[in-house]
Image 1 (cartoon, rainbow, N blue to C red):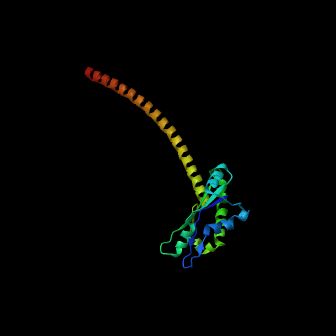
Image 2: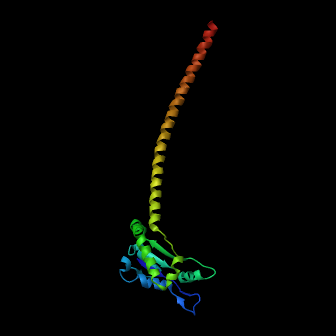
Image 3: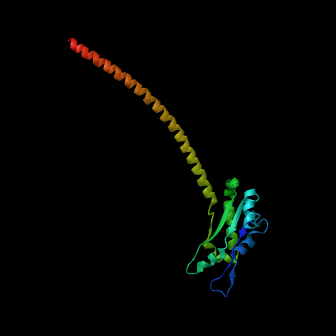
Length: 193
């Protein structure tokens, strides 16, 4: 998995110019080889995008430039929710969906073990629960398939009904002809009386 850190850091509130570098701290925590069962590699955004497209990475974690700034804003008058963005390889979406919980736990653990721990409760992970979203997509596809099947069956029934209606109209026309002929005979018979 790739991690792209564009965080610019931010001055901690109520400090003498001390800076929070939450992005750097998170990268330092999760990039040691094999940490948490994943091999996180710090890359540029272009390298991450290319690697994701080529299958080199199954996921890309993006730490935005305002990550630290938003984290420290929680102690001020205008708090903003910090966000991380996890993008996955759509070709392996089901597999990645199964691992999303593990990835989320590793990221949270990494954040909890840095000086950003006091701000972690304010962090919003852009992918929240990818597994839940994958399940919803599967359910939606199943419902769509069921609807298409119902539509196909309904179209067949509509066609059968239209054929039956056509036959009924033919029978009605024959009956009207018979009625007309019978009325003519009745008129002739009443004239004979």
